[in-house]
Structure formats: C-alpha cells, structure tokens
Image (tube, rainbow, N blue to C red; front, side, top):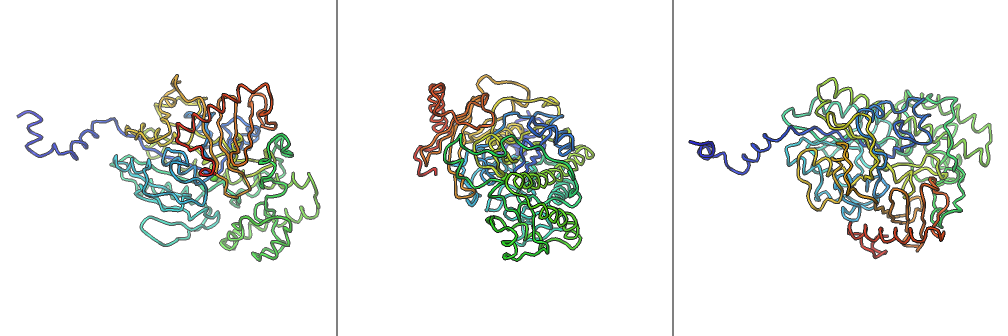
Length: 537
Ligand code: CA
C-alpha cells in the first residue's frame, strides 16, 4: 500500500485534515505581539530623530521602546491614512482606508462583520487576543479573548469589558500598569502553547487628558522641555482652515482638565471648574471622572504635587506669551510622564518574552495610532495632514529576519500592517486589502516598485474645528485639498519642513503642483475614493 492509499484507507484525505497536515509541513508560524499606543508622537520617542530627541534620550523617557528599535527596523517614513484614533485602528485591523472600512471618524461604529486580520489569523490556527484601548464602538470580533477599556477609558482605576461578560469590571491601579499586567497575565495563564499567538497590547497612554502615575509626578521637576520654534505660529502662511481651528495651547487647551489648574479645594462641581477657567470650553470632563475614581492615597499624592504647583502658578499671574509657555510646559510634562509609564510597561512585557523563551519566535511591532502636536504650530491634538500628526512611529523586531538597528526610508502606512502580519504568518493576503506587505522591507530589501506617494483623508466632524481634507505626499512634496472649501496648500518639505508657508500660489511650483494634483487623482482612483466632495466630507 502506498502512502496515498494508506491515508485514504484511514479516511485522512478529507479536506480538513489534509490542510492540517499541510499546515504542519509549513515553517513554524511566528507569534505576533502588536503594541499600540495612543497619540504617541515621534518627537517624544528617543529612537526617532526630532526636535526633542536629545531631551527624551537624556531623561530616559523611552528606553524600552528604543531598545526594540535597536534590535529591529525603525520606519523613518511611516504615515497614517487618517490621523485619528478609531479610524487608524480600523485601518490597522482591515488593511483598508477609512472610506472602505467605513470608520471615517470617532463616533462611527466599526462594522464587526467585516474582514479583519484577526479573523484571518484565527482561521489559520492563531490564538488571538486584544487587551487595552479598543475605541471602535462595536465589540471585538476575531479575538478569542479580549479585555478592553470602554470608550476612551480612564487612567486611574479604570473599568474593563471582558469577552463573555456584559459587565464593566473596575480594576485597581494605573491604566498603563494594568494593561502591562493583563498582557503578561494573558501570556502566562491564557496562552495555548500548541498555537502561535496574535496579541494586541493597546495602550491608552499618552492620550488626553494626560494623567501621570504618582511615581512620575516629580519627573522633570525644575527642567524645561524645549520649545518648538513655531509655538507662536500665527497661521498667516496657510489657508483659512489652519487659522480657524480650535486646538491651540493658547486658547483651547482646557486649563482645568488638560493642564490641571484645578480649584484650590478640589471638587467636581461644574460651577467651580468654570470659575477656575472662565475662558476655556469644557471639551472633556475626564479629569473629574478620574477624581471620583482615585483612591485616597492616589488623591493625596495628586494634591501634594499639583496643589503647590497651582498656588505658585496663580501667584505669578502670567499673561500673554508667558502664560502660553507655562501651559505648554505643564501639558507636555504630563504627556511625557504618561509616555514614560507606558514605556516601562512595554519593557516589562519584553522582559517576560525573554525570560520565557518566547523572544526568538515573536515578531514585536511597536506603533501608535497617529502622531501628535507637542506645541508645534501652537497646537496639541492631531487630525491634520501636517507632518507631526501624519507621521506615526513604527518599529518592528523579528529575530533572525530584521537587522538590528536597521532604518527604512520607504513610505509605509498603517494599512500595511495587516498584510505584513499575514505574510509573516504564511497566510495569503486577500485581494481587497489595500495595504502592502512590508516583508521585503523587513528583510532589508528595497523593492523597485515600492510606492512613491501616499493618500491621506480626514473627515471633519466638528472636533477642534478641523476642516475635512485630503491630500498626497511624496518624498519631498505635499499637496492638501480642503475640498469642502475649495482651498489648497502645497509644501516643499525640503525648503519648508515646518510647513509654515504654503507655496500653492508660487509660480515656481506650478508644474509640480499640477503633477501632484494628477497623483492625488490617481491615488483616489486606485483606492476607490469617490471624487464627489459631499459624500466624503
Ligand atoms: Ca489616537
């Protein structure tokens, strides 16, 4: 009896079993750990060249993420397709731009029935889990386990929703530590040793309203964070959209909730908050919900740090640029402290992988859902196609595949993560996925036909009064169309890297602008983005 007859005789040539046999003959599938943070800028990540790189390195803010970069590939030109939390996550899961996966803006609901990378991995024998911030309105599908924050979640003693339970369960502690603990606990107790895993460890930090852990309150005491040279941008070099936004540190950051200049006697009374900050709009009450959640010890530590700081601030009676500078320092120091706690927890998870023999079989991806303004253009927040929020960090470590300390200059986007993960796992990428696998780049190759430009879309829904826009960026130039207003901006990034003066009306660039318009049209057709401005506004 030959092998085929033998298998036939015991009924093993059924489709299911033969595919398992085939799977057994494939090279071992790697584990995949996707660590995603929320709003982490390149400026506050030590491994990235930026205006604050030396400062961040000197004060050891991100040593653990920097270590992943030293062991893997850092993508110097990584961009998002739509710079906002939910849409970026939806693009990561689907490998598709917002207009295809349907999640255009926060407030939308992710269609849980659509194809995702998690579902495909699950079908291919992967054990899948997501822990931390989800923010897609519908509950996760394609994950064997999940423990997620409802909505934005809280920093102090937050609630979580777990698979199989409709109840919110409050966990004691600080959000980044809890997500670190839960990630390690999943690896330790829930992991099925017979399967490869796809584990998403998705942090809330350093999202607004930037509440640090008490162990970091005094970090950066007496130290000034470097100021960006365009902190006092007057927006004169751009169209009406940049002038009419509501995201400046000067006028829009909330002095109570964002900058923590809380009333002398802490309270959650809206009247007192208004009294403390008469000229600010209350956009987010998170801080005060957080106060209700704090334990007496947490609250005591909070008051010991912020109350004297606020007394000193009031006594100074700052005005004008001095007040902006003070708010800039206060905001950014809290933001950096939140990055620090998140980085510490990335380090703990990396240590666990190493100590438990998982390091060599695990691809580690570190990314953030977008970049962020740390005072550049006078702003906080994201949304715009300008560099600080268009770019996001992307670092990938795959032992024996990625060269330690490698840097990749090719243009990549968050739609590329899903196909990359699938190809790394030896799974065919469905045709409808719009991103491209980064596998050749991870292996240090430079494919000749790699993309030379990227498409960007933002759907304005009122938040921070940022107008809808779309655009194209290549290695050197950027064209932005505020299509609902009929306004355009153009930048030669080599000449004007801070994007202070649009050259859209500069005759010197006429031909290049015309070519960029063609390129935008081409990309819109390629990615099936309809030209009708109304449907995309
Ligand atoms: Ca975000």
